Length: 245
Image (cartoon, rainbow, N blue to C red; front, side, top):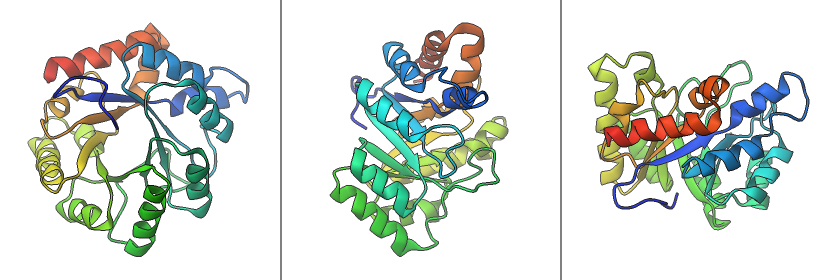
């Protein structure tokens, strides 16, 4: 995504999926993800992210269109590699699409996309999106094979899955994998993003990685917003990132 800050600025993109999760608990009209996106931008978010799942468990098609109408920062659409999702992306043309793994039985995304499986399907999907003027990214584990394959497939960016780090931030190996992966990705000419399970408490070491240019954070922001409001939650995260950088 295009930076809205100065040199070295680490971008913060807020994933608003779980604003929709709260709404869908009652299948009503509040809270409104589009309204949340506007508040996040005002609080300092550099972009907005949402995952349109095949089962529409939280974010809905109407949400996607509403968000794209009101936001001023780049929008990152997370989606599975399916003809339906590719067609939606081509029609609405978000700034970026991040291709992610998706299983119906999972509560949340459990790991990175295995980009060594069905490489031609992925290559064609990335090319199709790029032809529509959409920037492309792949959500992958911080693994050398996955990063090198992402480059071969033609992605513009990779988002490194930080779930293992978030589960064991005291384990030096989890951060080392992210550091090595980010360095490799950048050396290959990929833009390097990161996300999953990051909170104010654990974001610092990831934010300090010089080769990472963007973080995607959602669940912890929405969780914190229950207590302090979403604007304050975004500002707290932004402050924690800036302190580490």
